[in-house]
Image 1: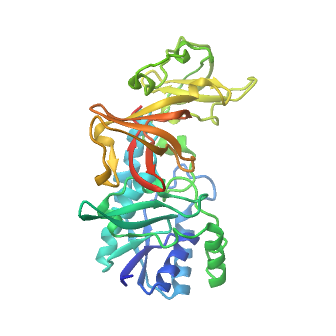
Image 2: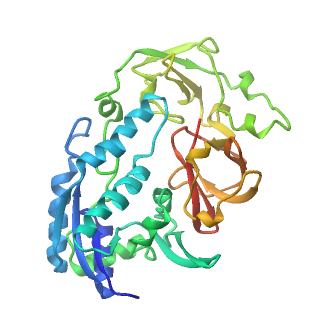
Image 3: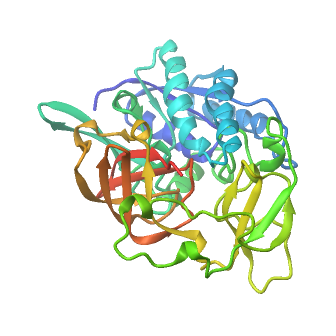
Length: 392
């Protein structure tokens, strides 16, 4: 292994702390870099303002490992390239994944540039994933592989990285199990050894989402309409075309009774249970669709409500991203692969069809909670080869 000057993103968590240690063990020159990406505390849940604590823990780890620690404020880039995107997506009734965008736009772009200014030839994070390089068609390609720990694999969050980014990325703990990482941190006496993992929006923290979004999206009172499980939209359609199977279920405000009120359809997402504040039902209600234009939230009763499930989805042509461009499908091709539509979801068998209208993913089994704005990622064995934003 070539020895490099590696800039590791010290976040104040145990994973990046042990990542720095592993790099030192491998003989690299290691430099810590702490990012500040958010200033506003609007919507943050009480006692959860992570920045000050995170920086203090990062400083303690750097001191313990005897590595320099630098600081960079990327908050303007983060707001412009991640948070503004979030607001725009929610305004359209879509549910974005800010962590995926944060990795593509910040950690492996803006942060990478800051690392290069410190003389870094590579950047490292504490993600649970792996990389290697293979030769295809006479040139090298960098592979993004699932982490060894099946309970912590984070390759999904990196599904939008490209070859140039992977060429300079290192994931030192991708081969380790989480308990092993904790053990190493404890043996080293690192302050982060028993610190809880961060939760919530990347670099923002755990938030009350409606309050957070109301910084830019106005609350508007609207109706909650309950859809019965025998709605005509769920009628079996044998041999229906793929384009039809990929469409979301459609409803109108007169398709069911009004069972409650909400403060803005844009604040809800498919599969959501909390925040509806509708009682008196035999089973919990779940969001099955939202209509931002008419400001209506549609719900169905019970976890098995057919409105929660769909057979297929579509990704628009310009949203299809190939981590491995040499494996990109041409129009007219189809391929059986493994797919996930959210973090921690077990991989699902599906057939991908590349068409002029985009990429269709036809699942072997109907999927719960397919949500516009989220990312679908597809794998060949344990390699993530591509991803895209779910269209609707």
